[in-house]
Image 1 (cartoon, one colour):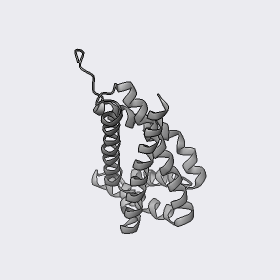
Image 2: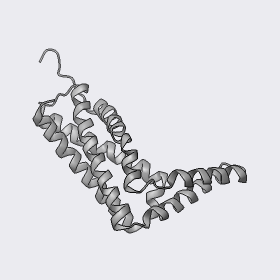
Image 3: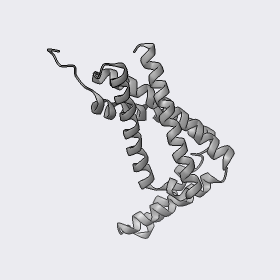
Image 4: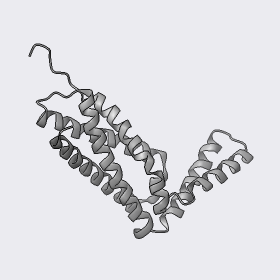
Length: 179
């Protein structure tokens, strides 16, 4: 990938990352319980797909004469997604360890409540619910610390690859053979 494409991908990733941070801060200010919901996760993912598709199409139209192969689209979006993920990782470290060190405990409580409610909705026996809640609580322990966030950073390239695959398939556009 040429350096111009890389710099455009970095710029796009920074823009999407900053938009994500702004939305995260707005959600934090309005009601932190939303941050622990599946709805928030799915809406965030859908917004990410939209934003990365948008920056990919903008790059395709502004710098690639309106055409881009799947491979080039994937590379562009992978770099942008990785930059966005790293920016969000840094933001998470700041939010959970500097801005509001009590937030991890609050989010853990909301996740436990949501898990319990979901399992009750499906009619799970009380002993299964208790066992699952213990497991979730154990899994959440230390997840929001700097070390926990960095330990989970292995997923950033995976997420960027998923974004690249989905959005690359959306924005690819073949040049007509007889143009």
